[in-house]
Structures are given as structure tokens and as C-alpha cells.
Image 1 (cartoon, one colour):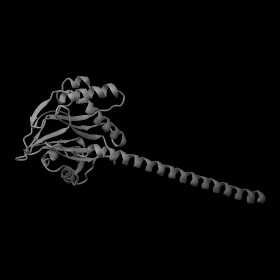
Image 2 (tube, one colour):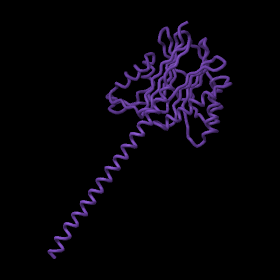
Image 3 (tube, one colour):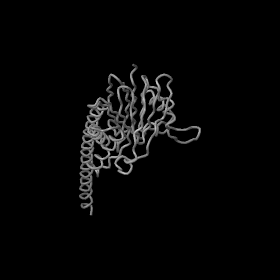
Image 4 (cartoon, helix red, strand yellow):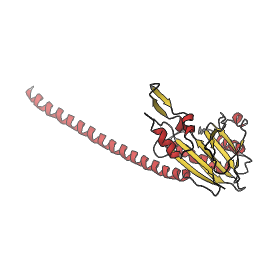
Length: 278
């Protein structure tokens, strides 16, 4: 019995040591692989962010100036984006969209939308026609991708006359002479739903020299803050954005994000397009 005791105990301890050592080595290797995968993902997201930032950086024109503020919810890339371009007939086109998803999936959907929009405006007669064409492309080519968007699309002329469609975005006209803010009509339609697209009609608007359009996706006004008076979290709200919409977009974010307990839980994109003074 003594011999078995003095033989089994060292063997048991040795086996336990081997198991512990194997467990340590396996976990160390697993942690190294996980860290390597995370670093690779971080670099991929960073690269995607550089690509998307190239699309988001404001590009002006002789007739209009642009200011853009983008703050993705998940790090480097997001599903909110815009396009500002000139078509062959001389009109300028503005697209501001809030797409499905965040992070890399949202970034991929936004780049797809950016490219498809350039095709949708070819021969489009107005902003509503462009949105209908874009909706049809999304419905036919990506039926399983669940690419849903909220859109603001405007077709502008150098003279300041424009037509627009607004599907669930916050859009404002800001007068240049007195800073008066007017909220533009929004239609509760689903892009990609044929019945909804039949209801879309463009609205005409005129921007005098110095006037501007301001468009914000819902990430800004649906952010939360701690409402001390109500003792609960509340939404920032559209009214708070409208109140300071004549400020630069980065100042809007800085002011609203300074609210107590501010929490962003969606991508944020704000676009200011201003008609240059004559």
C-alpha cells in the first residue's frame, strides 16, 4: 500500500502538471490567434474607413459649398453616406442616405448605394424619378440583401432652383439673411417598396444666394442623454438640432454631445450645402 501511494501520487501530480501546462499553452495560443484576428479585422476596418472617408469628404462647386460631418457608430465605417455630383445636363445632385447596418456591413452597403446612385440619375427627370430608379435597382439586384435606406435626394440648378424628395430624413432650409430655419416635408415611405414609390412626388424649392440646405440622418437627433428634470434618458430630438442648425455641423455635434450622459447608438451624418453668394 505504501509503495502504491508513493508511486501513484507522483504520477498523479505529473499528469496534473501536464494537463495544466497543456491548458496554459492551448489558451496562450488561442489568445494569440484571437489577438491576431482582431488586429487583422482592425486593419481591414481602418482601410475601409479610409475608402469611405474619401467618399464622404466634402467636394464643392463654383455654385455651392459643402460642409460634411460624419461620425460612425462603430469605429471606422458606417452605413450613412452622401453623394454630391454634377450630371451631363448641368444639374447638381445631392444624396444623403441612412443604410442598413453599422461597421463593415454598413460601409459596404453605403458604397453600393453611392455607386448605384450615379446610375440612377442618368436620364432622371427629377429627384422623385431618381429615387424610383434607385429603388427599382435595389429591389431587382439585391432582393436578399435587405438593403433598406432613408433618403434625401435633391436635383439643383446653378440658379438655386431645386426639387427634392425626402424619405424619413431631417431636412431644413436655412435662410442666409436672417438665419430662419424651415423644416422640409418628409414622406414616410420605404425605399424598395413599389407601392410606396408610386406615392413619391418631388417638392420644388428655391435657395437664394447665401441660403443653405441642412440634412441630418437620425443618429444625431435619436442619440440619448440623461434628462435630469425627468430623471430618465431622453432623445436629443429634432427640435434641439433645428435650434442650432445654422451652426457648423461639427459645432452642432460638440454642443449636443456635451449634454449629460450623452450616448450615440447609431451612425451620425450631417450635410450642409450652401448656395454661394452671387
